[in-house]
Length: 630
Image (cartoon, rainbow, N blue to C red):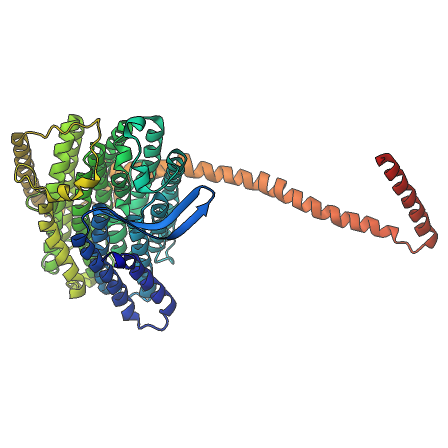
Protein backbone atom coordinates (compact mmCIF):
# COMPACT_ATOMS: atom_id res chain seq x y z
CA UNK A 1 0.00 0.00 0.00
CA UNK A 2 2.90 2.37 0.76
CA UNK A 3 4.03 2.06 -2.84
CA UNK A 4 0.77 3.75 -3.89
CA UNK A 5 0.97 6.75 -1.55
CA UNK A 6 2.44 9.02 -4.23
CA UNK A 7 -0.66 8.42 -6.36
CA UNK A 8 -2.94 10.13 -3.82
CA UNK A 9 -1.93 13.68 -4.87
CA UNK A 10 -0.97 12.65 -8.42
CA UNK A 11 -4.50 11.56 -9.40
CA UNK A 12 -6.13 14.99 -8.91
CA UNK A 13 -3.05 16.68 -10.42
CA UNK A 14 -3.43 14.46 -13.48
CA UNK A 15 -7.11 15.39 -13.61
CA UNK A 16 -6.21 19.07 -13.59
CA UNK A 17 -3.64 18.67 -16.39
CA UNK A 18 -5.86 16.48 -18.60
CA UNK A 19 -8.91 18.74 -18.28
CA UNK A 20 -6.84 21.93 -18.73
CA UNK A 21 -4.99 20.83 -21.85
CA UNK A 22 -7.76 18.78 -23.46
CA UNK A 23 -10.80 20.86 -22.51
CA UNK A 24 -11.43 21.71 -26.15
CA UNK A 25 -11.23 18.04 -27.12
CA UNK A 26 -13.03 16.33 -24.23
CA UNK A 27 -16.84 16.34 -24.23
CA UNK A 28 -17.97 19.04 -21.79
CA UNK A 29 -19.94 16.59 -19.67
CA UNK A 30 -16.90 14.35 -19.28
CA UNK A 31 -14.78 16.87 -17.35
CA UNK A 32 -16.91 16.56 -14.20
CA UNK A 33 -16.91 12.77 -14.35
CA UNK A 34 -13.14 12.62 -14.91
CA UNK A 35 -12.45 15.06 -12.05
CA UNK A 36 -14.70 13.04 -9.71
CA UNK A 37 -13.09 9.72 -10.64
CA UNK A 38 -9.62 11.14 -9.91
CA UNK A 39 -10.65 12.21 -6.42
CA UNK A 40 -12.42 8.88 -5.84
CA UNK A 41 -9.20 7.04 -6.72
CA UNK A 42 -7.32 9.08 -4.11
CA UNK A 43 -10.05 8.33 -1.57
CA UNK A 44 -9.79 4.59 -2.18
CA UNK A 45 -6.04 4.60 -1.53
CA UNK A 46 -6.60 6.71 1.61
CA UNK A 47 -9.10 4.14 2.89
CA UNK A 48 -6.49 1.44 2.33
CA UNK A 49 -3.96 3.45 4.37
CA UNK A 50 -6.51 3.80 7.17
CA UNK A 51 -6.66 0.03 7.59
CA UNK A 52 -2.95 -0.66 6.99
CA UNK A 53 -0.99 2.08 8.80
CA UNK A 54 -0.53 1.69 12.55
CA UNK A 55 2.47 3.97 13.09
CA UNK A 56 4.04 7.03 11.50
CA UNK A 57 5.89 6.36 8.25
CA UNK A 58 8.04 8.85 6.32
CA UNK A 59 8.41 8.17 2.59
CA UNK A 60 11.33 9.97 0.88
CA UNK A 61 11.19 10.49 -2.89
CA UNK A 62 14.03 12.86 -3.84
CA UNK A 63 16.14 15.73 -2.50
CA UNK A 64 14.02 18.74 -3.36
CA UNK A 65 16.04 21.74 -2.10
CA UNK A 66 19.75 21.70 -1.28
CA UNK A 67 21.68 24.89 -0.55
CA UNK A 68 24.62 24.94 1.84
CA UNK A 69 23.52 23.30 5.07
CA UNK A 70 19.86 23.48 4.07
CA UNK A 71 18.52 20.18 2.79
CA UNK A 72 14.81 19.66 2.27
CA UNK A 73 13.67 16.30 0.89
CA UNK A 74 10.41 15.88 -0.97
CA UNK A 75 8.78 13.36 1.32
CA UNK A 76 5.41 12.46 2.80
CA UNK A 77 4.54 11.73 6.42
CA UNK A 78 1.78 9.16 6.74
CA UNK A 79 0.36 8.87 10.24
CA UNK A 80 -3.07 8.89 11.87
CA UNK A 81 -3.49 12.67 11.65
CA UNK A 82 -2.63 12.88 7.95
CA UNK A 83 -4.77 9.82 7.13
CA UNK A 84 -7.75 11.36 8.91
CA UNK A 85 -7.37 14.57 6.90
CA UNK A 86 -6.88 12.56 3.70
CA UNK A 87 -10.22 10.84 4.28
CA UNK A 88 -11.98 14.16 4.89
CA UNK A 89 -10.42 15.94 1.90
CA UNK A 90 -10.91 13.14 -0.61
CA UNK A 91 -14.17 11.73 0.80
CA UNK A 92 -16.08 14.98 1.20
CA UNK A 93 -14.26 16.34 -1.85
CA UNK A 94 -15.54 13.45 -3.99
CA UNK A 95 -19.15 14.05 -2.90
CA UNK A 96 -18.83 17.75 -3.70
CA UNK A 97 -17.32 16.95 -7.12
CA UNK A 98 -20.29 14.69 -7.92
CA UNK A 99 -22.74 17.34 -6.70
CA UNK A 100 -20.99 19.92 -8.90
CA UNK A 101 -21.72 17.86 -12.03
CA UNK A 102 -25.39 18.75 -11.58
CA UNK A 103 -24.91 22.23 -10.13
CA UNK A 104 -22.57 23.43 -12.91
CA UNK A 105 -24.28 21.52 -15.73
CA UNK A 106 -25.41 24.69 -17.52
CA UNK A 107 -22.19 26.67 -17.05
CA UNK A 108 -20.22 27.07 -20.26
CA UNK A 109 -16.91 27.12 -18.35
CA UNK A 110 -17.47 24.01 -16.26
CA UNK A 111 -14.31 22.35 -17.60
CA UNK A 112 -12.23 25.17 -16.13
CA UNK A 113 -14.20 24.86 -12.89
CA UNK A 114 -13.46 21.15 -12.48
CA UNK A 115 -9.81 21.65 -13.45
CA UNK A 116 -9.40 24.22 -10.68
CA UNK A 117 -11.31 22.02 -8.24
CA UNK A 118 -8.92 19.13 -8.94
CA UNK A 119 -5.95 21.46 -8.57
CA UNK A 120 -7.25 22.54 -5.18
CA UNK A 121 -7.53 18.90 -4.03
CA UNK A 122 -3.91 18.32 -5.16
CA UNK A 123 -2.57 21.26 -3.13
CA UNK A 124 -4.69 20.35 -0.10
CA UNK A 125 -3.31 16.82 -0.18
CA UNK A 126 0.22 18.22 -0.47
CA UNK A 127 -0.44 20.37 2.60
CA UNK A 128 -1.72 17.39 4.58
CA UNK A 129 0.87 14.82 3.51
CA UNK A 130 4.08 16.88 3.61
CA UNK A 131 6.68 15.67 6.08
CA UNK A 132 8.14 19.13 6.67
CA UNK A 133 7.00 22.72 6.97
CA UNK A 134 8.26 23.72 3.53
CA UNK A 135 6.11 21.17 1.67
CA UNK A 136 3.20 22.12 3.91
CA UNK A 137 3.79 25.77 2.98
CA UNK A 138 3.81 24.91 -0.73
CA UNK A 139 0.41 23.27 -0.34
CA UNK A 140 -0.70 26.14 1.89
CA UNK A 141 0.06 28.70 -0.83
CA UNK A 142 -1.44 26.46 -3.50
CA UNK A 143 -4.84 26.24 -1.82
CA UNK A 144 -4.76 30.02 -1.42
CA UNK A 145 -4.20 30.38 -5.16
CA UNK A 146 -7.03 27.96 -5.96
CA UNK A 147 -9.30 29.79 -3.55
CA UNK A 148 -8.61 33.00 -5.48
CA UNK A 149 -9.31 31.32 -8.82
CA UNK A 150 -12.57 29.72 -7.65
CA UNK A 151 -13.97 32.71 -5.72
CA UNK A 152 -13.49 34.80 -8.86
CA UNK A 153 -14.64 32.00 -11.16
CA UNK A 154 -17.39 34.23 -12.61
CA UNK A 155 -14.81 36.93 -13.30
CA UNK A 156 -17.09 39.05 -15.48
CA UNK A 157 -18.66 40.29 -12.24
CA UNK A 158 -16.39 42.96 -10.71
CA UNK A 159 -17.80 42.36 -7.23
CA UNK A 160 -16.69 38.73 -7.39
CA UNK A 161 -13.23 39.82 -8.52
CA UNK A 162 -12.96 42.16 -5.56
CA UNK A 163 -13.97 39.32 -3.23
CA UNK A 164 -11.26 37.09 -4.75
CA UNK A 165 -8.65 39.84 -4.37
CA UNK A 166 -9.71 40.44 -0.77
CA UNK A 167 -9.34 36.75 0.10
CA UNK A 168 -5.96 36.51 -1.62
CA UNK A 169 -4.49 39.67 -0.06
CA UNK A 170 -5.79 39.05 3.46
CA UNK A 171 -4.43 35.51 3.40
CA UNK A 172 -1.01 36.88 2.44
CA UNK A 173 -0.90 38.65 5.82
CA UNK A 174 -1.27 35.36 7.64
CA UNK A 175 1.05 33.59 5.21
CA UNK A 176 3.84 36.04 6.02
CA UNK A 177 3.56 35.01 9.67
CA UNK A 178 3.69 31.34 8.67
CA UNK A 179 6.78 31.92 6.50
CA UNK A 180 8.59 33.80 9.26
CA UNK A 181 7.71 30.96 11.63
CA UNK A 182 9.30 28.42 9.26
CA UNK A 183 12.46 30.54 9.03
CA UNK A 184 12.66 30.80 12.81
CA UNK A 185 12.14 27.03 13.12
CA UNK A 186 15.10 26.40 10.79
CA UNK A 187 17.30 28.94 12.59
CA UNK A 188 16.44 27.33 15.95
CA UNK A 189 16.43 23.62 15.10
CA UNK A 190 18.47 23.57 11.84
CA UNK A 191 15.69 21.58 10.21
CA UNK A 192 12.13 21.96 8.97
CA UNK A 193 11.36 18.24 9.15
CA UNK A 194 8.49 17.48 11.54
CA UNK A 195 10.05 14.50 13.23
CA UNK A 196 13.41 16.23 13.75
CA UNK A 197 11.82 19.43 15.06
CA UNK A 198 9.46 17.58 17.39
CA UNK A 199 12.30 15.56 18.92
CA UNK A 200 13.57 18.71 20.67
CA UNK A 201 14.60 18.78 24.32
CA UNK A 202 11.26 19.69 25.93
CA UNK A 203 12.74 20.71 29.27
CA UNK A 204 15.16 23.07 27.54
CA UNK A 205 12.56 24.86 25.44
CA UNK A 206 9.51 24.89 27.74
CA UNK A 207 7.94 28.37 27.82
CA UNK A 208 11.02 29.91 26.18
CA UNK A 209 10.61 33.11 24.11
CA UNK A 210 11.76 31.38 20.92
CA UNK A 211 9.06 28.69 21.22
CA UNK A 212 6.42 31.30 21.98
CA UNK A 213 7.56 33.32 18.95
CA UNK A 214 7.48 30.26 16.66
CA UNK A 215 4.02 29.16 17.78
CA UNK A 216 2.65 32.70 17.57
CA UNK A 217 3.94 33.13 14.02
CA UNK A 218 2.47 29.79 12.95
CA UNK A 219 -0.82 30.77 14.58
CA UNK A 220 -0.86 34.06 12.64
CA UNK A 221 -0.82 31.92 9.51
CA UNK A 222 -3.64 29.83 10.96
CA UNK A 223 -5.65 32.98 11.78
CA UNK A 224 -5.53 34.05 8.14
CA UNK A 225 -6.39 30.70 6.61
CA UNK A 226 -9.01 29.80 9.24
CA UNK A 227 -10.61 33.26 9.32
CA UNK A 228 -10.10 34.29 12.94
CA UNK A 229 -10.29 37.82 14.33
CA UNK A 230 -8.97 40.13 12.91
CA UNK A 231 -8.34 38.27 9.61
CA UNK A 232 -11.84 36.88 9.15
CA UNK A 233 -13.60 39.37 6.83
CA UNK A 234 -12.49 37.63 3.63
CA UNK A 235 -14.47 34.44 4.29
CA UNK A 236 -18.04 35.83 4.11
CA UNK A 237 -17.13 37.70 0.90
CA UNK A 238 -15.72 34.46 -0.51
CA UNK A 239 -19.32 33.26 -0.88
CA UNK A 240 -19.17 35.01 -4.26
CA UNK A 241 -17.84 31.75 -5.70
CA UNK A 242 -20.09 28.88 -6.84
CA UNK A 243 -21.77 27.09 -3.91
CA UNK A 244 -19.74 23.84 -4.28
CA UNK A 245 -16.63 25.99 -3.81
CA UNK A 246 -18.09 27.40 -0.60
CA UNK A 247 -18.79 23.85 0.60
CA UNK A 248 -15.39 22.35 -0.27
CA UNK A 249 -12.91 25.15 0.27
CA UNK A 250 -14.58 27.51 2.71
CA UNK A 251 -16.34 25.02 5.00
CA UNK A 252 -14.89 21.51 4.90
CA UNK A 253 -11.22 21.67 3.95
CA UNK A 254 -9.10 24.77 3.32
CA UNK A 255 -10.28 26.81 6.29
CA UNK A 256 -9.50 23.88 8.58
CA UNK A 257 -5.84 23.98 7.48
CA UNK A 258 -5.17 26.38 10.36
CA UNK A 259 -6.51 23.78 12.79
CA UNK A 260 -4.37 21.10 11.17
CA UNK A 261 -1.13 23.08 11.46
CA UNK A 262 -1.68 23.56 15.22
CA UNK A 263 -2.53 19.89 15.70
CA UNK A 264 0.47 18.84 13.61
CA UNK A 265 2.69 21.17 15.70
CA UNK A 266 1.10 20.15 19.00
CA UNK A 267 4.52 19.32 20.51
CA UNK A 268 5.60 22.95 20.07
CA UNK A 269 2.29 24.39 21.27
CA UNK A 270 2.34 22.22 24.38
CA UNK A 271 5.59 23.98 25.31
CA UNK A 272 4.05 27.46 24.90
CA UNK A 273 1.23 28.00 27.44
CA UNK A 274 1.10 31.71 26.61
CA UNK A 275 0.30 30.90 22.99
CA UNK A 276 -2.39 28.42 24.02
CA UNK A 277 -4.02 31.10 26.17
CA UNK A 278 -3.91 33.51 23.23
CA UNK A 279 -5.49 30.87 20.96
CA UNK A 280 -8.29 30.36 23.50
CA UNK A 281 -8.90 34.11 23.65
CA UNK A 282 -9.02 34.54 19.87
CA UNK A 283 -11.15 31.44 19.35
CA UNK A 284 -13.70 32.48 21.99
CA UNK A 285 -13.94 36.04 20.68
CA UNK A 286 -14.33 34.85 17.10
CA UNK A 287 -16.96 32.25 18.00
CA UNK A 288 -19.34 34.63 19.76
CA UNK A 289 -18.60 37.64 17.51
CA UNK A 290 -19.38 35.78 14.27
CA UNK A 291 -22.45 34.12 15.81
CA UNK A 292 -24.01 37.49 16.66
CA UNK A 293 -23.46 38.69 13.07
CA UNK A 294 -25.09 35.56 11.63
CA UNK A 295 -28.26 36.28 13.61
CA UNK A 296 -29.17 39.22 11.33
CA UNK A 297 -27.94 38.09 7.90
CA UNK A 298 -30.46 37.55 5.10
CA UNK A 299 -28.26 35.89 2.45
CA UNK A 300 -28.50 32.10 2.90
CA UNK A 301 -24.80 31.63 2.15
CA UNK A 302 -23.69 34.55 4.35
CA UNK A 303 -25.46 32.99 7.34
CA UNK A 304 -23.55 29.76 6.74
CA UNK A 305 -20.31 31.68 6.16
CA UNK A 306 -20.44 33.44 9.53
CA UNK A 307 -21.49 30.14 11.05
CA UNK A 308 -18.28 28.64 9.66
CA UNK A 309 -16.20 31.46 11.18
CA UNK A 310 -17.92 30.85 14.53
CA UNK A 311 -17.39 27.08 14.42
CA UNK A 312 -13.73 27.57 13.56
CA UNK A 313 -13.51 29.66 16.73
CA UNK A 314 -14.95 26.68 18.62
CA UNK A 315 -12.21 24.46 17.18
CA UNK A 316 -9.45 26.86 18.22
CA UNK A 317 -10.83 27.00 21.76
CA UNK A 318 -10.49 23.21 21.89
CA UNK A 319 -6.86 23.54 20.79
CA UNK A 320 -6.24 26.38 23.21
CA UNK A 321 -7.37 24.31 26.18
CA UNK A 322 -5.00 21.56 25.12
CA UNK A 323 -7.56 19.12 23.72
CA UNK A 324 -6.11 18.65 20.24
CA UNK A 325 -8.09 15.50 19.43
CA UNK A 326 -11.34 17.31 20.30
CA UNK A 327 -10.48 20.14 17.92
CA UNK A 328 -9.83 17.65 15.11
CA UNK A 329 -13.00 15.76 16.06
CA UNK A 330 -15.04 18.94 15.54
CA UNK A 331 -13.19 19.50 12.25
CA UNK A 332 -14.50 16.11 11.13
CA UNK A 333 -18.11 16.51 12.23
CA UNK A 334 -18.16 20.09 10.95
CA UNK A 335 -16.95 18.90 7.54
CA UNK A 336 -19.99 16.61 7.37
CA UNK A 337 -22.77 18.94 8.45
CA UNK A 338 -21.38 22.21 7.04
CA UNK A 339 -20.71 20.68 3.62
CA UNK A 340 -24.26 19.31 3.81
CA UNK A 341 -25.71 22.72 4.70
CA UNK A 342 -23.83 24.55 1.95
CA UNK A 343 -24.77 22.00 -0.70
CA UNK A 344 -28.40 22.00 0.48
CA UNK A 345 -28.31 25.81 0.26
CA UNK A 346 -26.97 25.38 -3.27
CA UNK A 347 -29.94 23.13 -4.04
CA UNK A 348 -32.26 25.89 -2.82
CA UNK A 349 -30.43 28.53 -4.87
CA UNK A 350 -30.55 26.21 -7.90
CA UNK A 351 -34.33 25.83 -7.50
CA UNK A 352 -34.76 29.59 -6.94
CA UNK A 353 -32.94 30.47 -10.19
CA UNK A 354 -29.99 32.03 -8.37
CA UNK A 355 -31.89 33.84 -5.59
CA UNK A 356 -30.02 33.82 -2.24
CA UNK A 357 -32.14 36.19 -0.12
CA UNK A 358 -34.10 34.16 2.44
CA UNK A 359 -36.66 36.98 2.69
CA UNK A 360 -37.77 36.03 -0.82
CA UNK A 361 -38.10 32.31 -0.13
CA UNK A 362 -40.48 30.49 2.26
CA UNK A 363 -42.64 27.39 1.96
CA UNK A 364 -40.04 25.40 0.05
CA UNK A 365 -40.33 22.19 2.07
CA UNK A 366 -43.22 20.94 -0.09
CA UNK A 367 -41.45 21.69 -3.38
CA UNK A 368 -37.99 20.51 -2.25
CA UNK A 369 -38.71 17.62 0.16
CA UNK A 370 -35.27 15.95 -0.02
CA UNK A 371 -33.44 19.26 0.32
CA UNK A 372 -35.64 20.19 3.28
CA UNK A 373 -34.98 16.93 5.14
CA UNK A 374 -31.21 17.04 4.68
CA UNK A 375 -31.12 20.74 5.59
CA UNK A 376 -33.09 19.94 8.74
CA UNK A 377 -30.57 17.21 9.63
CA UNK A 378 -27.68 19.60 9.06
CA UNK A 379 -29.39 22.24 11.21
CA UNK A 380 -29.97 19.78 14.06
CA UNK A 381 -26.36 18.59 13.79
CA UNK A 382 -24.78 22.05 13.94
CA UNK A 383 -27.16 23.06 16.74
CA UNK A 384 -25.86 20.21 18.88
CA UNK A 385 -29.06 18.20 19.28
CA UNK A 386 -28.50 14.49 20.05
CA UNK A 387 -27.86 12.09 18.45
CA UNK A 388 -26.52 14.14 15.53
CA UNK A 389 -22.78 14.62 14.97
CA UNK A 390 -22.44 18.16 16.26
CA UNK A 391 -23.80 17.18 19.67
CA UNK A 392 -20.84 14.93 20.47
CA UNK A 393 -18.02 17.23 19.35
CA UNK A 394 -19.60 20.38 20.83
CA UNK A 395 -20.27 18.64 24.13
CA UNK A 396 -16.63 17.62 24.30
CA UNK A 397 -15.40 21.16 23.63
CA UNK A 398 -17.72 22.60 26.28
CA UNK A 399 -16.60 20.05 28.87
CA UNK A 400 -12.90 20.79 28.29
CA UNK A 401 -13.60 24.54 28.32
CA UNK A 402 -15.39 24.15 31.66
CA UNK A 403 -12.38 22.31 33.10
CA UNK A 404 -9.98 25.12 32.16
CA UNK A 405 -11.94 28.37 32.25
CA UNK A 406 -15.51 28.84 33.46
CA UNK A 407 -15.88 32.22 31.71
CA UNK A 408 -14.91 30.71 28.36
CA UNK A 409 -17.43 27.94 29.02
CA UNK A 410 -20.19 30.51 29.58
CA UNK A 411 -19.35 32.41 26.38
CA UNK A 412 -19.25 29.20 24.34
CA UNK A 413 -22.58 28.14 25.83
CA UNK A 414 -24.12 31.44 24.74
CA UNK A 415 -22.55 30.95 21.30
CA UNK A 416 -24.07 27.48 21.09
CA UNK A 417 -27.55 28.88 21.75
CA UNK A 418 -26.98 31.67 19.22
CA UNK A 419 -25.93 29.04 16.67
CA UNK A 420 -29.16 27.15 17.18
CA UNK A 421 -31.18 30.38 16.97
CA UNK A 422 -29.79 31.63 13.65
CA UNK A 423 -29.89 28.17 12.10
CA UNK A 424 -33.52 27.63 13.15
CA UNK A 425 -34.28 31.12 11.82
CA UNK A 426 -32.64 30.21 8.52
CA UNK A 427 -34.53 26.90 8.34
CA UNK A 428 -37.97 28.37 9.01
CA UNK A 429 -37.59 31.47 6.83
CA UNK A 430 -36.46 29.28 3.93
CA UNK A 431 -38.72 26.23 4.17
CA UNK A 432 -41.78 27.26 6.23
CA UNK A 433 -44.55 29.83 5.87
CA UNK A 434 -45.73 30.99 2.45
CA UNK A 435 -43.65 31.47 -0.67
CA UNK A 436 -42.43 35.07 -1.01
CA UNK A 437 -40.65 34.92 -4.37
CA UNK A 438 -41.88 35.82 -7.83
CA UNK A 439 -44.50 33.90 -9.81
CA UNK A 440 -41.82 32.86 -12.31
CA UNK A 441 -39.61 31.46 -9.52
CA UNK A 442 -42.56 29.58 -8.00
CA UNK A 443 -43.42 28.11 -11.38
CA UNK A 444 -39.89 26.76 -11.84
CA UNK A 445 -39.44 25.36 -8.31
CA UNK A 446 -38.30 21.74 -8.47
CA UNK A 447 -36.18 19.27 -6.53
CA UNK A 448 -32.57 18.90 -7.62
CA UNK A 449 -31.57 15.92 -9.80
CA UNK A 450 -30.19 12.71 -8.20
CA UNK A 451 -26.60 13.67 -9.03
CA UNK A 452 -27.07 16.49 -6.49
CA UNK A 453 -29.41 14.85 -3.96
CA UNK A 454 -27.47 11.57 -3.53
CA UNK A 455 -24.33 13.37 -2.15
CA UNK A 456 -26.70 15.33 0.12
CA UNK A 457 -28.20 12.11 1.48
CA UNK A 458 -24.75 10.57 2.11
CA UNK A 459 -23.61 13.70 3.95
CA UNK A 460 -26.87 13.67 5.93
CA UNK A 461 -26.11 10.10 7.07
CA UNK A 462 -22.58 11.13 8.09
CA UNK A 463 -24.00 14.13 9.95
CA UNK A 464 -26.38 11.81 11.77
CA UNK A 465 -24.03 8.99 12.76
CA UNK A 466 -20.54 10.55 12.49
CA UNK A 467 -20.58 11.71 16.10
CA UNK A 468 -20.55 8.17 17.43
CA UNK A 469 -16.83 8.08 16.65
CA UNK A 470 -16.36 10.12 19.83
CA UNK A 471 -18.82 9.04 22.48
CA UNK A 472 -18.80 11.12 25.73
CA UNK A 473 -17.12 9.44 28.68
CA UNK A 474 -20.45 9.25 30.53
CA UNK A 475 -21.67 6.92 27.77
CA UNK A 476 -18.53 4.93 27.01
CA UNK A 477 -14.85 4.67 27.90
CA UNK A 478 -14.01 3.89 24.27
CA UNK A 479 -13.55 7.22 22.54
CA UNK A 480 -12.54 5.89 19.12
CA UNK A 481 -11.43 9.24 17.75
CA UNK A 482 -9.28 10.14 20.75
CA UNK A 483 -7.74 6.66 20.87
CA UNK A 484 -6.87 6.80 17.16
CA UNK A 485 -4.97 10.10 17.55
CA UNK A 486 -3.48 9.44 20.98
CA UNK A 487 0.03 8.35 19.80
CA UNK A 488 0.54 11.69 18.00
CA UNK A 489 -0.62 14.16 20.62
CA UNK A 490 1.13 15.56 23.67
CA UNK A 491 -0.60 16.97 26.72
CA UNK A 492 0.50 20.52 27.67
CA UNK A 493 2.08 20.64 31.11
CA UNK A 494 0.06 23.78 31.87
CA UNK A 495 -3.22 21.99 31.17
CA UNK A 496 -4.81 19.83 33.82
CA UNK A 497 -7.67 17.74 32.49
CA UNK A 498 -9.62 17.23 35.67
CA UNK A 499 -12.30 15.27 33.84
CA UNK A 500 -15.58 17.02 34.68
CA UNK A 501 -17.83 14.94 36.87
CA UNK A 502 -20.31 12.66 35.19
CA UNK A 503 -23.19 14.39 36.95
CA UNK A 504 -22.15 17.78 35.56
CA UNK A 505 -21.85 16.43 32.02
CA UNK A 506 -25.26 14.75 32.27
CA UNK A 507 -26.79 17.94 33.62
CA UNK A 508 -25.18 20.05 30.88
CA UNK A 509 -26.35 17.73 28.08
CA UNK A 510 -29.91 17.57 29.40
CA UNK A 511 -30.09 21.33 29.99
CA UNK A 512 -28.78 22.16 26.52
CA UNK A 513 -31.02 19.62 24.80
CA UNK A 514 -34.16 20.86 26.57
CA UNK A 515 -33.23 24.49 25.87
CA UNK A 516 -32.61 23.77 22.19
CA UNK A 517 -35.95 21.97 21.83
CA UNK A 518 -37.74 24.95 23.42
CA UNK A 519 -35.78 27.31 21.16
CA UNK A 520 -36.80 25.24 18.14
CA UNK A 521 -40.49 25.50 19.06
CA UNK A 522 -40.32 29.25 19.74
CA UNK A 523 -38.41 30.13 16.56
CA UNK A 524 -40.72 27.96 14.45
CA UNK A 525 -43.76 29.74 15.80
CA UNK A 526 -42.15 33.15 15.27
CA UNK A 527 -40.41 32.92 11.88
CA UNK A 528 -43.11 30.85 10.19
CA UNK A 529 -45.38 33.89 10.27
CA UNK A 530 -45.31 36.34 7.38
CA UNK A 531 -45.30 39.44 9.64
CA UNK A 532 -42.05 38.35 11.26
CA UNK A 533 -40.07 38.05 8.03
CA UNK A 534 -37.18 40.61 8.06
CA UNK A 535 -37.91 43.79 6.11
CA UNK A 536 -36.51 44.09 2.59
CA UNK A 537 -35.40 47.67 3.26
CA UNK A 538 -32.46 48.01 5.64
CA UNK A 539 -33.80 51.35 6.85
CA UNK A 540 -36.74 49.52 8.42
CA UNK A 541 -34.41 47.57 10.74
CA UNK A 542 -34.07 48.64 14.34
CA UNK A 543 -30.64 50.11 15.26
CA UNK A 544 -29.23 46.92 16.84
CA UNK A 545 -30.35 44.75 13.91
CA UNK A 546 -28.87 47.26 11.47
CA UNK A 547 -25.50 47.07 13.25
CA UNK A 548 -25.51 43.25 13.09
CA UNK A 549 -26.74 43.26 9.49
CA UNK A 550 -23.78 45.48 8.56
CA UNK A 551 -21.35 43.18 10.44
CA UNK A 552 -20.51 45.80 13.08
CA UNK A 553 -19.17 47.94 10.19
CA UNK A 554 -15.81 46.17 10.49
CA UNK A 555 -15.28 46.21 6.72
CA UNK A 556 -15.92 49.94 6.69
CA UNK A 557 -13.51 50.37 9.62
CA UNK A 558 -10.78 48.42 7.83
CA UNK A 559 -11.44 50.48 4.71
CA UNK A 560 -11.05 53.72 6.68
CA UNK A 561 -7.98 52.91 8.77
CA UNK A 562 -6.08 50.57 6.42
CA UNK A 563 -7.22 50.60 2.79
CA UNK A 564 -7.75 54.33 2.24
CA UNK A 565 -4.53 55.39 4.01
CA UNK A 566 -2.59 52.87 1.91
CA UNK A 567 -4.18 54.25 -1.25
CA UNK A 568 -3.30 57.78 -0.08
CA UNK A 569 0.32 56.80 0.60
CA UNK A 570 0.63 54.96 -2.68
CA UNK A 571 -0.75 58.01 -4.50
CA UNK A 572 1.85 60.25 -2.83
CA UNK A 573 4.67 57.81 -3.66
CA UNK A 574 3.41 57.57 -7.23
CA UNK A 575 3.31 61.33 -7.77
CA UNK A 576 6.48 62.28 -5.87
CA UNK A 577 8.80 59.25 -5.73
CA UNK A 578 7.82 57.43 -8.91
CA UNK A 579 6.88 60.27 -11.26
CA UNK A 580 9.35 62.90 -10.13
CA UNK A 581 12.32 61.04 -8.63
CA UNK A 582 12.49 57.74 -10.54
CA UNK A 583 10.96 58.87 -13.83
CA UNK A 584 12.61 62.30 -13.46
CA UNK A 585 16.08 60.75 -13.09
CA UNK A 586 15.58 58.44 -16.08
CA UNK A 587 14.17 61.22 -18.22
CA UNK A 588 17.00 63.58 -17.18
CA UNK A 589 19.62 61.04 -18.22
CA UNK A 590 17.92 60.62 -21.56
CA UNK A 591 17.67 64.37 -22.12
CA UNK A 592 21.33 64.74 -21.06
CA UNK A 593 22.43 62.25 -23.70
CA UNK A 594 20.36 64.02 -26.36
CA UNK A 595 21.75 67.44 -25.32
CA UNK A 596 25.32 66.09 -25.27
CA UNK A 597 24.92 64.58 -28.73
CA UNK A 598 23.36 67.77 -30.09
CA UNK A 599 26.22 69.86 -28.61
CA UNK A 600 29.11 67.59 -29.57
CA UNK A 601 27.97 67.30 -33.18
CA UNK A 602 28.80 71.03 -33.59
CA UNK A 603 32.47 70.07 -33.25
CA UNK A 604 32.21 68.13 -36.53
CA UNK A 605 32.69 71.30 -38.64
CA UNK A 606 34.78 69.77 -41.47
CA UNK A 607 37.69 72.17 -40.81
CA UNK A 608 40.95 70.14 -41.04
CA UNK A 609 42.94 72.74 -39.16
CA UNK A 610 40.55 72.55 -36.23
CA UNK A 611 40.84 68.74 -36.22
CA UNK A 612 44.68 68.97 -36.10
CA UNK A 613 44.45 71.47 -33.26
CA UNK A 614 42.21 69.09 -31.26
CA UNK A 615 44.64 66.19 -31.88
CA UNK A 616 47.62 68.21 -30.59
CA UNK A 617 45.72 69.35 -27.51
CA UNK A 618 44.60 65.76 -26.83
CA UNK A 619 48.16 64.41 -27.13
CA UNK A 620 49.45 67.06 -24.71
CA UNK A 621 46.61 66.23 -22.32
CA UNK A 622 47.51 62.52 -22.42
CA UNK A 623 51.16 63.24 -21.66
CA UNK A 624 50.24 65.53 -18.76
CA UNK A 625 47.81 62.93 -17.42
CA UNK A 626 50.44 60.15 -17.52
CA UNK A 627 53.06 62.37 -15.88
CA UNK A 628 50.59 63.27 -13.13
CA UNK A 629 49.87 59.59 -12.49
CA UNK A 630 53.59 58.84 -12.09
